[in-house]
Image 1 (cartoon, helix red, strand yellow):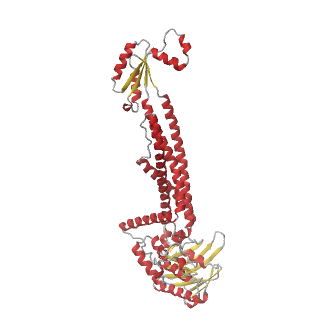
Image 2: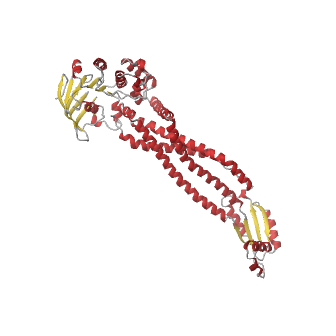
Image 3: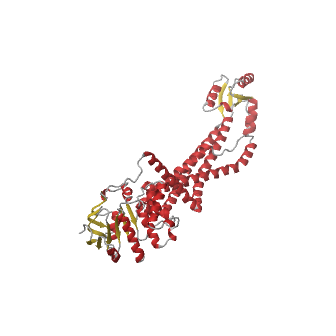
Length: 318
Length: 225
């Protein structure tokens, strides 16, 4: 006697059967989660918090970078003129620069003004009294139009200013902005490391949840195996359970982060108001929410896959 | 249908469960395996269901050499076998219907198909009206019959029963044996392990007697030593 054909062979029915088995496994996993609401809630809450932490740090970083770039753009250019440039020529240059499309405003600082400010700011007043003549050059304080500068445009503008015949040198006073950006780069890396560690934590949490679930359902797995369930059939509900835990955890993380942003938006707007800034704290963009959910789902899948590979192998029908 | 040639089975602990077993059960036959506890009855059934692997010799079931049934072929092979246990091994968080449906769900049948065949199997064992109950609400004999319905619902070629009457009173035991006989009459090859010698003698079927892993007699059966 030959074995009877047990599986539908026509391709349409194979696809339908495959799909319905997947849907069954998915519904079954969702049902299992609902039947144990407290356990599921605790697990997904831990996953949610683990995912919310890096997401929140990412938001802090993204908003800080926006602040830094806004300030970086607002930096002024100081153009030091040669010593032999007369005040009239300095004024004329200022007037012509005001007509430059990338310049909002130009202020002339005469050597006398510069000396007065230096005396006030440096505390070397007495020493400066000893000087026979003013060693300081005239300078132009240029306020560039932020909106027109992006990428290397600022460097190009600076080079053009240096090339002026009256110019001695031109400086872009952004050193502190560069330091801030460097600091943010370090923080960026720190957030990545933190995210990697917490992703590992999520993997372990999901792996452990699935491991327990495998042992709780040992009898069922054994019976299924004895009646001819394939490895794929047995694994499927556990993999879906992992994905669901990851997704729900990510959803929870999103809610937590959104709540935190909402709580902070008021005070941040107040602070921005004190600086006469239009700055608004941004939440997670739709694209990032999709990424967060994707990461949650993938972590859930990988965690459960590892647990399934590790623990299902031990089970053989009794 | 089932052919054992010089089959040895040694557990990893070193205990030899079966020694040089030769037997042959024809297609459509019904045979009993008997012997004391530990004589190797269960091991013999477990080898046929591929729950255990024999360590020497050859087993051929339904034309398939079991040594070649590995990996992905194991689930497909098992779909041709029905198994019942002394301790029933039902899933106690599922209804009677869901328990019986399991072999069909596992092999991907459509729901309409599943419902029709599960109800037919439950009707056959007289439990159709209890399909929505949980197994815990059923008596021992009823649970045993749920196990039998589960073992035949996918119309296996071979039905294996390990001590099916172990926990039942004589009348229920006899009814259960008659039920197995009915499945045998529609063409299923049935192998039953039982130590209830009085009852299986009354069934007038081949009896394979095991003692300490060896075949002692094969009264009325074909093959054996």
